[in-house]
Length: 363
Image (cartoon, rainbow, N blue to C red; front, side, top):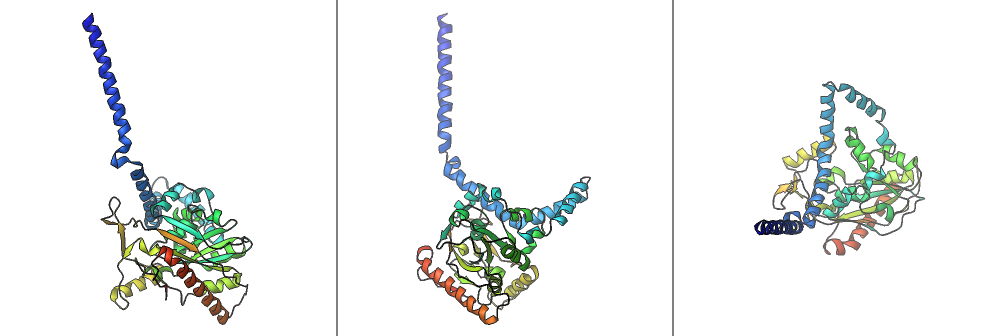
């Protein structure tokens, strides 16, 4: 009997020992290097950035191919219904789009913001009784700063500029792609064409801010770490549009936008540069040979951008009168004012966010 009791006691002690060992192991689990809080957060940040990159490169094409494939299956009716709705909804991107506050406030964008990290700096108040055209510089490779600041609420645009609705303008071809078009519109993104911008600035009341990446594809071919160059000297269409709509011009510069990818830049006059220029005119966007880091290591090449801080500074608005048919002289005058304001903005903040001896090159 005593033997049975002793075995029973030893059994309980053994269970307690195993239980305490298991509890100890579970308590030690969060401290494992591969499962630490900082590691998990970093991986979530990488995934949030990579999903956006892959959406830009693959979502539109993949959904187009999927739609064609479904047409060839027994589920063709679903594809036909979606295509009919797509035709019916075709002009929505040109008419203000379909903004979603819910999508703009997704938690994934906070991870996106914190990966680099990205900051938005306000220098002056903007009146909700006016409309604005933001000139965003530089383009970089994928305009991460422009998207995070103006296509989401991750950096608190609406809180910093109450009463102002930002609309980031991008390639019109993106809005011909199924699913991708809706994803872009949900962030308040619109086509960068005359009809779309005119609609936002003239038929959508006041408090609108259209964000135009002025340098466009041509500027992206010259972006590289350490380069502070903008393509602006011959870009006057946005100034004329501002005059015709009476929309104030606001210079915006993103320090660090050119730092997140490394690009192979070909010299002007070479065969490769000529090919890039021709493809740019044909496709509407530039074919850049660039790379970031790998998914799991900074020492490998991949599509994940490097962790470099991006600081977007919104400058002082330039008051623009409404002139339906502005003369070239007036356009040149306000264009010169805009360049001067942008250079002043760069020089004022370069000490904090770039090298103090940096010079902004306007091409």
